[in-house]
Image 1 (cartoon, rainbow, N blue to C red):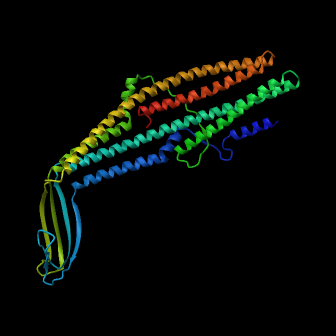
Image 2 (image 1 turned 135 degrees about the horizontal axis):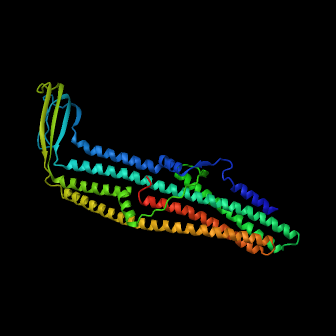
Image 3 (image 1 turned 60 degrees about the vertical axis):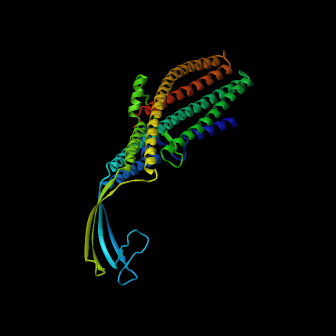
Length: 429
């Protein structure tokens, strides 16, 4: 009686996992959309891409005039004005005055350095846009994996609950037969052990499902673990393309590879800009203003314009070191891209093999389940006819439960592997 009560309590706890909170109905598409909208990693990647665009505007700003206003008030200790006597090569006269003016400076040319910096910034901005796409694909892969894991755990729990009910019924039948001296107490003990194993399986399945829901909840940006009623996902079609075609698709479609290509190109453009550090730069400047209060030698207003050329002559090896650093960084970016391409070629091959193996295992476990169901039916018939033993029935039930769990696991493992291959090919956008 105590065992039956324990079983009932366990089934009540494991039945609807959220008796207090009604489970949310959720489809895979809804889960993916929620994650893309709410996951903080998506926000981080998006904000980083927006920040990179502002860097482009910063580099491009050198092409436009720089305008600033000035207000200057100067007093000195000598009423007849004064000169600076030290601290500079020239000795400018300091007049008492208060003046207001506007100054405009405009870069005429730096022989392409600013243009190269702007192109480099644009390429880095594009790399961050591709990083956003890569982050979205990574989140989708994690959501798909968590969703299929939760579906598998949910199905295993259903199998475990049904097993408990079935073995509880068998135990009651054996106890009735034992009471009528048609079965021994040993048979009752075997049936009790089978029920205990089913209860343990149910407890483990319940815990696994809660853990899967916790992972899925986190991906959906939920602070507290949620419970869900998950909709089944149709089996995807098999991917029959040859590996070489899949590799070419991955190399052309993967956003993380596109990000690395943009980073490499940006590094090369930056190296081009650093080579032009030794080039002169030519700028024009104009200023105008008024002097409402000041020494009598000063006119009421003023205006001037000029052209200035800066020619780098010597900086202690700074320019050469910066150029070489940029060139090394560009070469490193190129090698990083090549390494990632090699990794993706490997990952596509392995993931396709894993998916094909999962499909084979699924077919085998379905056949195993069919055979286990037939064996259980025969064992039940033999037991009812008095020809079989409780050990035969126990083994048949164990085989059926194992086959059901295996078939469930393989189904969702195949779907998860299919999603992983879509990720490798850059299709999860």
